[in-house]
Every structure is written in C-alpha cells, then in structure tokens.
Length: 243
Image 1 (tube, rainbow, N blue to C red):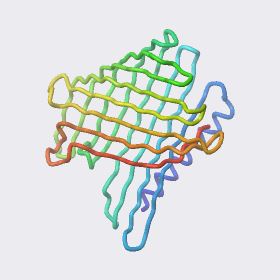
Image 2 (image 1 turned 180 degrees about the vertical axis):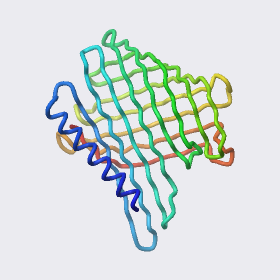
Image 3 (image 1 turned 135 degrees about the vertical axis):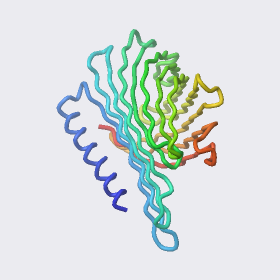
Image 4 (image 1 turned 90 degrees about the vertical axis):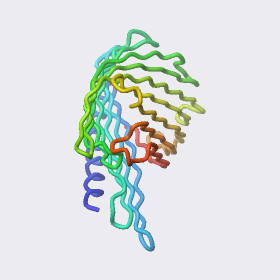
C-alpha cells in the first residue's frame, strides 16, 4: 500500500510541475498524463495502479524531444501480482512532413515478466504515410543495442531491430481510435522476438480531460525464465489529462 501511495504521489507531483512549465512555455512544451487506479475491499482486496506521462519539447519545427515514463502496480489480497516501470527518451529530426529520423534510449523493469532491468539505445527512421486530419498512419524501423538482466540472475547483450506501425482515425478533433503493432527481433537469436500491440479508443470529456479505453497484448516468444507465460494482456480504462 505504501508503494501505491508513493507512486501515485510521484506522478501527481511530476504532472503538476510539468503543467507549471507548460504555462510558461506554452508554444514549446506539451504534456499528457494518464492515471488509472482501482482499490476494492471486502471479500476480495484488489489494488491496481497505472500511470504514464509523455512530455514533449520543440527546439524548432524540425527538432523535437520526448520523454515518456510509466508504472504499473497490482496487488491482490495483500500480495503483489504486477509491478513494472519504464522510461524512454527520444530526439526526432523532421526532414519533411512525412520523413524523419530519431535516436532513443531507455530503461525498463518488470520482475513479473522476468526482466530485472533492460537498457537500450539506438537510431531509427520513420515515415508518415497519412498525416491527417482524419487518418494518421506511420511506420518506423530502428536498431538498438540491448542489455537485459533477468530475475534468474542471467544476463544477455544483443543487437535488436524493430518495426512499428501506428494508425489513428479521428472521429472528431478529440475523439480517436488508434491501433499500434510493434515487432522486436534479436539478430543473435532468431527465436528471441517480441510482439506488442495496443488497441485504444479515446473519448473527450472536456478540453483537457479524456477517457481512454485500451487493450494491450505483449507476446514474448522466449521468456526468461522459461516457466513464465509467453503472453500478457492488459485491459484498462484510464483518465487522460492534457496540459
């Protein structure tokens, strides 16, 4: 319970601090925070917390930066059954409305999926096939050096490639449907690959608040340790705050 309160406080403080900066630098900064909290008692004591934050900064029309971080915490009848964290930094350079390149670096931790720590960094490129206003479609390819430490005290370093696609359809300016699919491949071991998917529907409640319903699927073809399940799924309803 203390972990849940600490993580909730951390993200609220971060979002408030970011909002202050956004007010001062409205044209260059933007921020999007997502919060989901379920706490039930009685016959079943269940606690679930999910929080994400995406902070963007425009150095110029061509050069943009983004920092994304998040956490997931779950507890049932006093025992943790989910706990993960991630942080990702990214710098994009836009050659045109459609073509861009980027470099990114990040860290993640998910002990219930066997990952004690995961570090990665590398370059990539993307292309916007459809740039709106109704339809948005982009594809990205990237190359990353990955260092993974597992909960069974083993470690692996490898070169990984990824292909990612994302599609959005805007019913209105603030009501959207999105679908993203990502494939991650280990060049040193062809049986070591991951597929991640997110299907989401965003409904606006006001100019700053939205409700996001999403279904996430994470598939690991070669989990470590091997006793873990290959597929994780997350169905959530989240409050989205745009600054």
